[in-house]
Length: 425
Image (cartoon, helix red, strand yellow):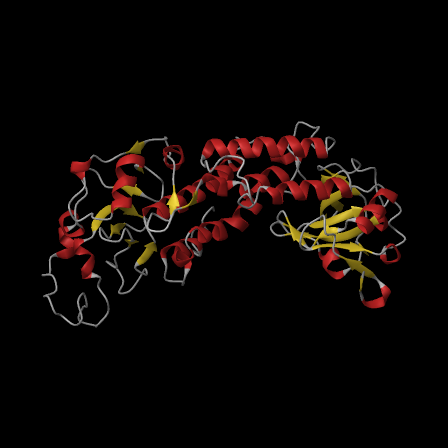
């Protein structure tokens, strides 16, 4: 095994996956008296980062005592964890989202999300043991990436596949740690992490020459607040729309009638100049103009968008302009020269995928925020909203990284708006 400073040592477990680290028995502290935990850490170890948790103990090769006074209160009570003395608690790491620490009770082997308060530590049970913790992590990671080799769903994607993936994963997780899932309150962390990590099962990448993503009608219906979808008839699409993949999406899949951020225009698609003549009252640039679409200050006014198609409304009373030749979607700069950046999304499929991803996280946020998800007061530390707010920017950006490329791009402006506090707030 590879040695750490001070004579401690650990190595990788080939059966556990990349980034998993294990300890030498001599490197484990005397406070870890729970033998099953000792044996597991020596034989298998833990990952450095996984399942929206980070294990600094695995990265640093140390299990240090957790500082503090008082007893653990699990699920908000002072004695639910058996009044474990803090001297038995060993720091495993922390989460990414609610400033909680991950601690292993060296006497019982139980693993907690912990936070220190004025009257002592408060904690939520994360796993009933280290082997169970590792098993739950593996399940989350297993559904967090596209399948390798044979696809169990035959290439199918969409809400029904997501529901099936989650159901099977939760069934396995319940078998891994039945004690954790025994109570009426969902366990802290795991269901929310599972929800986040399975969203990629909603779509798959498009083939070369096609749209960025393959969307299902069911997924587009989920974007709309009432599940309503508008499909265009061929005669509602003007001749300027020559991009065939976009034509097929609009006629076969459709657009959500109200997606919150995005609302389509009524009626047939029209050019930007036809739909918003007040914004395009100046004559178009003449052929051969070296600087088309510039105003008196030599700043781009995007006059070239006058022949794009007005797809629908975007926040800040902006209109989504669809390039009928390429399928790209842009924003005008009607109010401030150069702001926001023109690029909104690579195409309509990326726009819809980003709105759907945001909408799924927003719906879960509101489910707990409005009390529809249950009574989160049973948790002492964990809050679903903290995890959701921590991942939403990255997940929307991953759909189309160029949409977040600079602080002038609209999604970044929305995400970093000091007034709203972020995409989900």
